[in-house]
Amino acid sequence: MVFSGRDKRPRPQARPVAKSAVEIETILGPNTSAKGDVRSSGGVRVDGDFEGTIEIAGNLVVGQTARVVATISAHNVQIQGTVQGDVTAKRLEILDTGRMWGNISVESFVLDDGGFFRGQSKMAGDMEPPLLEAPKSRAGEVVDVEATVAE
Image (cartoon, rainbow, N blue to C red):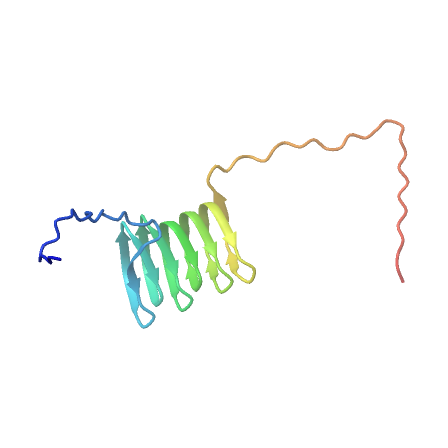
């Protein structure tokens, strides 16, 4: 048996890995406080305090220890901490520990049991409610309604 320092078999080439839509590229840690504007083509996670605007093409995760006062625009937003401000997103999810005060404009909205939301919501594709006709009364029909009061 002969051993050679070179392996003559072709090695598979590593293929580039596409970035996942949920990949987090930027993290604002729990002991961090920041003010200003955040713009990113990737995902962002906030675990500290932030005040300003967040405009990202990726997903935003507001961690359980986060306190955010901002106008937010992101692909998807998940709130585990506290947010005060307006949110525009494809999907907004407020988890059971999440708290949000502000207006939202979304395609999909999930509020977990225990989560809190106060504000107005507008869903993409809003349509006017259908015009419903009032019930028609039947001519000559007498309806007898009796009320009973419990003592």
